[in-house]
Image 1: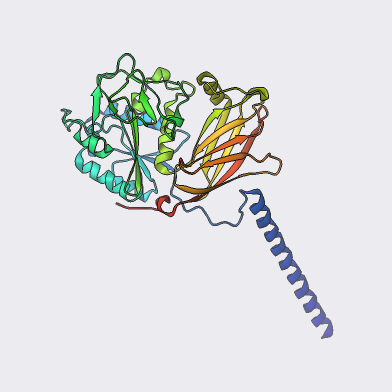
Image 2: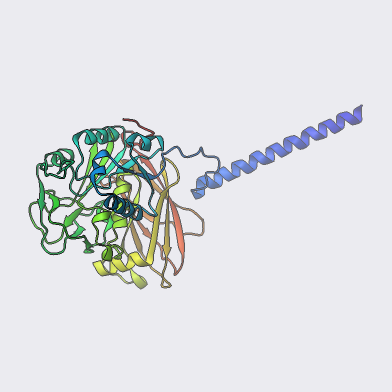
Amino acid sequence: MESGGNRLYAALMISSAGTLAVMGLALALLTIGAVIGPFRLFAPAPDFPSLGLGLWLAPSTQAAAAAERERRVDAWRSAVSGTAELVVDRSLSAFLDAGVRVVTLPDASALSEPEWLLLEGFLAGGGGVILTGSVGVQDAAGEPRGTALMEGLLRISHVSLAARGGVPTLIRGERGPLAAGLAPGQPLTLLPAPLLPGIDDPRADLAWLGNEGAGRAASRRLRVGAGRLVWLAAGPAEVAVARADTPGGDIRRVVAAAYAWAAREPFAEVLAATPGGAARKSDPAFDSGLRDRIAVRVGRTGPQRSLIEVSNRDATPIADLLLRVYLNTETVDVDVERTTLQQTQPHPSFNRAENRVDLRLPELAGGESQSYTLDIAPLATDAPPRNARN
């Protein structure tokens, strides 16, 4: 009897020791994760919506020839490749069911007022909308009906529909979240068109090349209700195919920047580097070449956490690499940490007024990759939408 009691006591002691060991290991892992950064092993699953772009085949888009409509869908599918999954549907509410929070149209030139009211409801619920080109300037039969609808939805006093001299080309305007899609001085060449839209906004992110004064601005960012509206003077279907893959001037980067702002996702821009440790100012040619050498990816891994991955594609080391990360959400604080102890800690500089953080990174050896976590403390009023419905 006594022997059985001893065995039971021994078993209980072994079980307790094992439990304490497991708890100690779990505590150690949590402590390491808290210090190093991204390894929150027991954190809850992310609860933010899926990162898809909804292409709405609204009734107004059905008047176009099937071949032209398909060309535009293919252009958007190519443009968002690597940024978001393209979800095509005729129902706006279907995107909400799929967790898609940003939508666009293949062609908004014949957008009707009832359709705009549906989009406005989508925005009011916290969604994002990207519109390109001339919006609502013609009726279902293709007849012109003026720019009043477009001026109303962009909240601008005048929209200019004019011929752009020479080859129509977009360039950077003021530095901002949408301008990050183009390198300084890098043109984005468009297909010829008789009339192209422009607005008056001296602080617009994008502008028409060679067109000064009225109607020069080529982009606009607006908050509508709880959502966000982006307008670009041209979309993927209007870009000249021969120039679509120009380094630094890729329409995919412009679309990615617009999508990021509409979705409140961070977007990174390579600004400058100091080759060989010698001081050198950034210039357009050097900036474009740097974008070819450096691959930067920023992706959400949680409601307030993103992972920044930086890779040097070249064999030559790059020193003093500077990244500008547009947070694209109202932020009160930012914390940037290395993901491994072997990496050197970056030097972040947070600009709360412009909701961006500049990261000056240590030397990146040829072929080397480094990654950092970026945690933000957003304002409660600018939180991402959660399955909002119109």
